[in-house]
Image 1: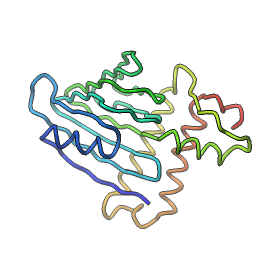
Image 2 (image 1 turned 90 degrees about the vertical axis):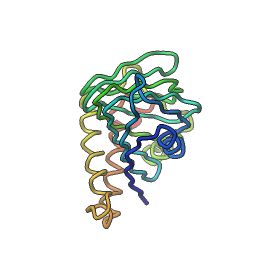
Image 3 (image 1 turned 60 degrees about the vertical axis):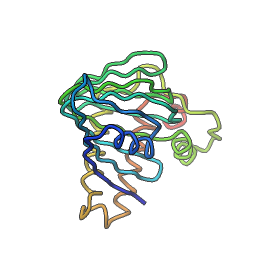
Image 4 (image 1 turned 45 degrees about the vertical axis):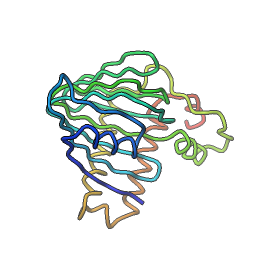
Length: 204
């Protein structure tokens, strides 16, 4: 089952409520005292959340909670600075960042930005992992340091764009749950096989 929604927010509190309900508790504010603007397209699948967002004036996020899972974010246009796990990371245009179950304390999105994110909970990625290996995958999956490369994020953006477009009202995927399920599996496979982790040798 999937649900696809798209909102344009001019009020920071409304945007904060939406993302806090669907992803993790956050507070959004306009960047540099400018007027607030954020457009979010979200497709919520079984255990996978896909977001495509853009802003003209920039947005500042601060986290008030914890998302136990994995987030893969990439910048189509613009740049963002992330404070996660007591470390600062910067994502430039065309680059991506994988965050492995860390508390994202701060996230600053620059002006004229367009970016996407994929979030998968630990519980769901572990379930997909157990489906693919015969061993008992009880230990939590841990991604190797360094994270995935540009090829991973390029393929991730492509799959996400197809899902976003197809899940809109009247889209081709709304009437084809089998096709949507296959795309979801491709996305999960991309994460499990495209990012080195402590179970990679079991999947070879």
